[in-house]
Structures are given as structure tokens and as C-alpha cells.
Length: 106
Image (cartoon, rainbow, N blue to C red; front, top):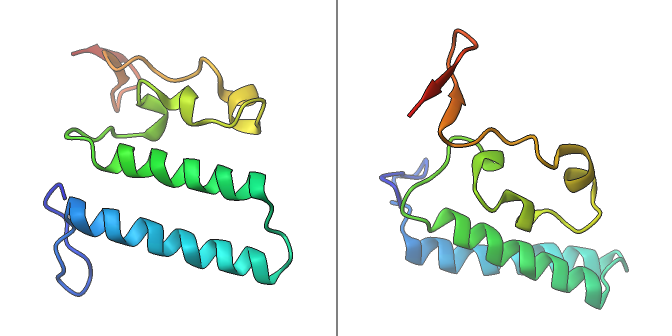
């Protein structure tokens, strides 16, 4: 959606996103299963991640950077590397940096 097309000219629509994400999730889970690395907990984490990215992609307005998303911390695994190293470092949406390095009020 958002006026984007794939290399073959296919328009990206919300329906396409809702179709492809579960298909790709199944490919990932199948590979993990083949490697003997798939657990119920890991399956739940991947399913949660798929739902979160689908929700993010289907929003009306997209953010320039994922970390600028108001709910970015809810996407991080609890106690995970992202949360422990980056918590609180996202720039508020009304203070995005400019090319000159100064912040600008929106």
C-alpha cells in the first residue's frame, strides 16, 4: 500500500501484505522445524513479530525510522538487546534532526 510496487509491477496492497506475511512466516517456521530449532515459545515470538510488523505496515502514516514509532518499545522483546541498549533513545516525533544536525520543530 502507500503507492509502492514490487519489481514485477505488482501493487503492494493491504491484502497482499496480509497474504504474504503469514506465508513467509510459515517458510521461516518450516526451516526452523527442519533444523530442530523450533519451540512453542519461538513460534509464539515469530507470530507476535509478524502481527506487529503487519500492524506497522498497515498504518495509514509510515514513520521515517522504526525507532521513531510511538510504540517502538512495545515491539522489543522484554529484556532483549534492543530494549536494554536503546530504551529511551528514540527522538520525539516533533524534534526530528535536520541535515545540519539541528532539531526542527514540526
